[in-house]
Length: 488
Image 1 (cartoon, one colour):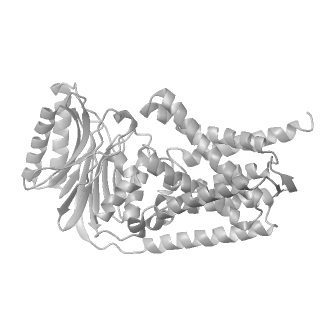
Image 2 (tube, rainbow, N blue to C red):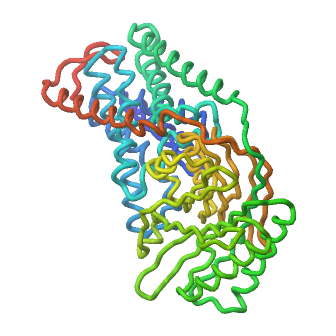
């Protein structure tokens, strides 16, 4: 074995290891604590390479291995060609973030370069959320849905704030791995990261100690995974509709005042949709309950996705048309209005599934001071935990309770701090039902509702300014783990 072969094998093995670890960060069921540490190996490998070409190969290999974890999911929800492109794009984003951070870290041997990586990712996520039809799906911040103390940063700066803190820890660890603990830059960077993380988690821990005080409310959630297509026969569809009626009746008899059913239970003609609305409006009036129910409507020329909130006193349905459409809904028309209904003195909002993946949508209801979001949903089973976690983060950002009922997913109630009050898996016929008795507070005021993604856009401006600064400076010798070396 030649003298250069063994180091190459070791480097390749470390690159693959970094990619495998990354799969547990960007996958559909992320391991929250790995998001804090796993990217550090990839960053350190990039920093340690004297040659940019080698660093690119290492990072791209790891990024492709990591991003490929979601390929099978993409292939379910979109055409195979687009699934390949999206997987490659996700890998490319990781490549850009890591390689740009490398350039800053090697160009400037200072402690403050620890901020390069978190600022880059926060800027990238902010731009994705604003510009892409699927938003910032895959944001590292969403990986923290099982760690409520970290999630509370979203009440200040949104999902981008959570991303920043998580990435900062990985960035500080990477400097130590790449350059050791002796250089002052590593020690200072570690101290700063420790202070920021302690402040963030301390704030989150204190926020979670706040007692919930509000109106006791009983929610009912029900779902039947079986779908009713446009061409479904009455023999197929009627047992499903009857089961929903039975579930609603059972939940109402157990004390439920507000019952949430899933998204797009059926795709119907306008006449069929009118009959279903009338049927369940009569049920709501008979049982004296509120019912949120989702259906799709196909008039032969266009399709729309609706949630109706049916009142117990026979008032007209409060409608909401889905704003943010999933990839299989590319032939649907998007809505733009917001629906708010006062129930027992509190404002309730309506959203549908993917709507709640967008911070701007969630914040629009926060600014309308809703206390509860009712969310009919339809997941793809494998993404149920992530979809539910993304939705819960909207509640933290804007301080409201969320009641989400998903087919092929989870029936979940989360409080304004993102904590799960109750949860149950959905099921095929005879379906699944969940009764939840909980305190519903008035909306909890948050800084994020007031300022939105201001911190994220600040990161975008910092990246833009930094890019100009790097472009204007000639390449020069820089500090690496082994001393001065040229970045080539």
